Length: 427
Image 1: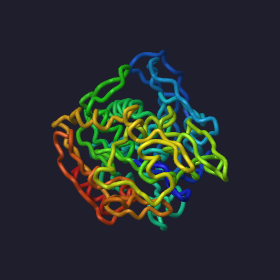
Image 2: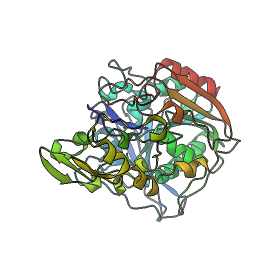
Image 3: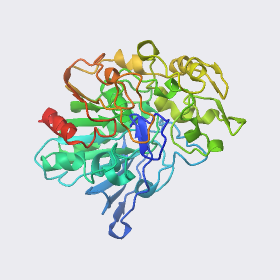
C-alpha cells in the first residue's frame, strides 16, 4: 500500500498508500525446513540464494531468500527506534530484523511448478507484506483488509485455483526507495522466468509496489541499475497513484500523533512536519519527515492536487503544512520543497510504458477505510484519488480500466469483483 500516514488505528500496514500495521505473524517453526546455500561473489545482476524454507504460513508452498550481489546497491538505513524493522515470520525468513535492501523473499504458491497457466508475480505495497495483501487478508486482524470481517484467502489462492503459477515478492525495507524496489522487481522476475522456464511474466502490483513496478517497466532506473528487460507480458496496477498524491501534506498535522514518539506514536509512515508539539512542548523529528532519507519512497510519489481538490482546512496548521512555514503546533517545508527534492511522478509520466506491455488500472471508489482518516476532498478509494489511479498519462497501451465503486484501497487485493476483473485481464 502507499503508507500515507494519518491512520487512527493499527489497522493498516502501508497504503500504496497507506498503512495497515499488521499483527505479528505466527511462524510454524516445527514444520520449517531451511536449506542454506553459500553466497556467491559480488557481481552486477548476480543473485545468490541464501535459503529455501518450506512449511511457511498463510497458504504458501515455500519461500526463497535471495540477495542481489551487486556491490553498487545502496546501504540500507533503518530508523533507530525499530519501527521500520521486519517482524514476525518475514523477519525469521530474512534472518534479520534489518536486512539489506539488496535482499528479498520470493514466495511460491502451491502449483508454482505444476499448474498449466502463465506465471504471475504479485508485488506488495508499503509497510505491508504479501501475506496480508494476497494470501490471508485477515492476517492483520479485524479491519486490516478494509472491512471488519476479513477473509482468510485472497488473490493468490484465487489465481492458483484458476491454474496460474503464482509467485510474490517481499521487500527487505517496507518503506524503501522505489528505485531499489524496481530493481528488486527485476530480480524477482528473473527468478520466476528461470523457475518456470518462461520468457515473460504477468506482473500484478499494489499501491506503492505498483508505482515501483511501473518504474521498472518504464525503465526509470538508478544510475547503477538495470533498465526494463522485456520480461513483462501484462502489467496490472492496483490502486496506483499514477498521477501522484498529496495526502501526507493535505490534512495538516492530523496524523502526527501517530508518528511522533513524544505523543505516543510509532507508525512507520512519514510526517509532513519537521517539528510538532506534543503535550505543550515542541519536538524536532526531521528523521520522521517525508523529507528524510527514511521515507524517500513516499516522497517519490508526491504530486500536488490542491488546484483540483483544495486542501483540508479542518485540521491544525493546514496552510503551513501544505505550503510551508511555521504554524501553531508544527513546522513544515511544504509539499513544493518535497516534490523538488525527490518526486518522480513527472519523470515516470514522461517515460512511457512500452506499447508491447498491455497495462490495466484497477481502482476503488469507496473512501471507507476503517480507522483511517479517509481522503474525501475528491472521489477516492480512501487514500488515492480516482483521477490519479485512472490516469493513463505516459502509459502507451492502457488495455483496461476498472473502477470498483464499492471497494476501498485495502479491498482491491481480495474482493471478489476485483479478483474476477484481474482474472479476466490475464485470461
